[in-house]
Image (cartoon, rainbow, N blue to C red; front, side, top):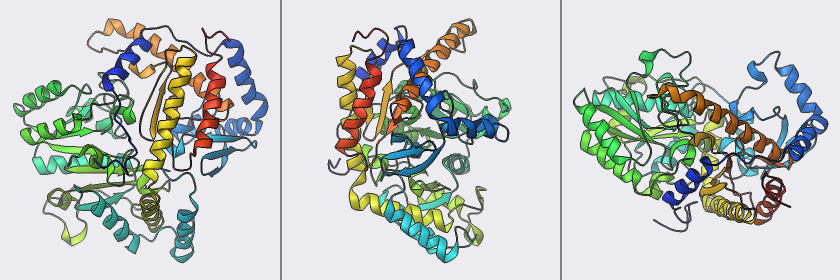
Amino acid sequence: MSANTFSISSYHNVKEIYQKLKTLINQPIRPVKRAKMEEYLKFFEDECQTSKKMIEEAQSYIPGGVQHNLAFNYPFPLVFTKAEGAYLYDADGHRYIDFLQAGGPTVLGSNYPAVKEKALEIIKECGPSTGLFHEYELKIAEFICNHFKAVDKFRMLGSGTEAVMAAIRVARLATGNKKVIKVGGAYHGWSDQMVYGMRIPGTGRFEAHGIPRSCSKHTQEVKPNNIAALEHKLKMNRLRGGTAAVIVEPIGPESGTRPVEYDYNAKVQALCKKYGALFIFDEVVTAFRVDVSGAQGYYNVEPDLTVFGKVVAGGYPSAGGLGGKDEYMAYLAAGLQGAKKRAMVGGTMAANPLSSAAGYYTLLEIEKNNACEKAGKAGDRLTKGLQELITKYNLPFVAYNQGSVCHLETSATMFVEVNLKKPWTLPKALKEIKARKHMMEEMGAAYMAEGLVTLAGSRMYTSMADTDEVIDDALLRFEKVFQHMEGVTA
């Protein structure tokens, strides 16, 4: 590994993290003291009236009042009107340090000027979409193929969910097999076959509401870091028709919430070769956030297919794509050049000029500015500071990071054990999940009231815009929350 471009400066101690998480989950929750929490909630009620009124009106027209899951913040979603660099601004004039970063795609920081300028040029010249070929389709594909050793061809699509669907379709065509194995707890989009074992390993179809059982009959899951369990599943599948693919999030399920050992991906790749399954790397989060060569460059593996999303369009819409080796990508060839048997994919807005250009210039700027490393250093500084605060206030919380992807577990909601094979244990587990989820929601609200935007109160993305001054300011704001936790004596 080269040490000067990756966002991950050193690899975390996976066993130590899991031990700390186990300690956390075995303790009663430690929420913000009630009086202080009421004070935080009063901030939303008194100081965020514009947002509150707009969301109340939106509930008459939009299911739940917002269009995107990331916007569901407690006690009600805020309305944001401006994004710039490391900051967000709401409709009531408050400024926040932005650790959501649109869910991860803005490694450069929000609304990066050089990319915005190129996007405006495209809009002026030809508009956002023509439905026909544009030069930036070529430019972004060429950049990706030149930087990802395992990508000979790249097909841009509308989202990461679409790209996962395409990858699985290609894998089944290429191998003639049907079974797909994922790592429990991982998120690979919301297609019927992938709403399986989400967030918490072992939950199978627990969240598959409205999805016929037949849609996921060929989807399987194994627990993270358990190579023996994966090989057992592959062996059994070989007796029953074979495995089409194994799909992983390279830094671990749910964007590294459950971290994996450094050699885990290489071991999975070896098993895929041994049992004739395609190895799919879901790099929706990690491509161009870990490095311009992706997480596969960091882990030194060569997947058969690579799923792209988020950063590939730099925060602009239609962020998705699939890359891979020639023999597999031939199944996605459009027009008369298509393979004899083609995997049907489409999308009117896929590879539109605006998204392709924004993505291309974003990737150029990331490389030119060494943005991955800078964002990773910000993540290291944030995580180290959080760990020091946790020690200072004698809290059971756990902070860890994979470069610019940072985790702060205060309630460990997703680490509650759920065993569907023992249904009599479910009521207790669900009650525990509900209590811990509410604490996580309140933590997110407390951070927001202190001027910090996080993802669900437990995950943060840092960017190149997060200078030492920004991170140090953020840590002071986190401390204001930590010093009011239950059990902390001021």
